[in-house]
Image (cartoon, rainbow, N blue to C red; front, top):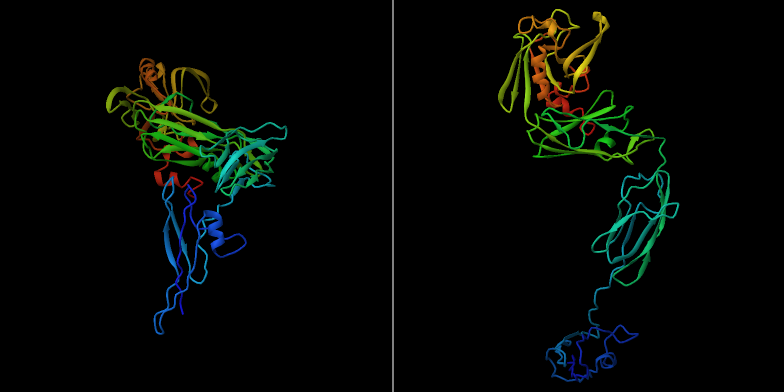
Length: 440
């Protein structure tokens, strides 16, 4: 025979409650547990039905309790004495510390971190061997904490603090780790300076005093941001002592460029680590391109799409491979009001020339030379330089920015990577991108 359970309630509390509690020491809900907690009296009566009648179902009741402060809803489920559903258990803190306790040879350039999955961080302190606190910053929700200054090489750091989980239980923040002791530290230097203006072909060069073994690790620490966005890539040159970034095509005039080399704490291979970060913010100026033709003995200057100069020139002697001016895209590297030139192979030393603009490291300049005015525009007789009259050389000199491209055509030899530090534009784009350590 089945039975029907009748639940009668009497309200005694003035608050909101839920009959979702079990009697102490029991896994079952009973009248003592209910009445003792909420002042609700539960009675059970047994009713008998005729033979063949369907057995009565187990109690499923929804009780709405009125009280002074509201109308809480109380639910109970029965069925052979089964208890009600309990509230979800609060979660422990889920503390995560990085680097982990006991870690060795930690790279000091990466931030040390503490975080919790469930709960908050009450306090976090990281101290160095001298007891000095490392600067750090908690998140707004107090669920994480990161260092905001670099750690030192070869030092042991110790955590302290406390986190509290959703379950209310405290968990200590503790442990220590040790940073790596480099065999040697190495610094890199940039060729571009802060707040400077450069020409549209300017490569970014980061140069080291010795070859870098772990080129991929270093390259991952490098970034170039441009406004407007400009496609570009890094390439390792000069026996892995220098890594250059250049755009796929010339920069747009007015481009803003920020380069960051976060080298401190970066492994360069063979126990060598970066000594310091380097960075620069600079601007690309107007577009100015020199277009020179050795066969026509001319040099034109195109600024922002307009021809602003057209000068007669004497280029290098084509008949002598040691004196020929190379065809290809040169880049202005520097300029000098007076420059002393020497070439013992051709029997001259300490010859001072005016208004000299260096366009490669193989001895090619654009400069003034009064002695060759007779040949300028007619004949190529120089030792590889572009000879102009002193007046024309001064006019060009005054217009120059480092990074301006100088495009030479018509000669018997091509500019190549061995012809200087700024040979970046001698590579086509596919070949250039293959020189990245991250693409090889």
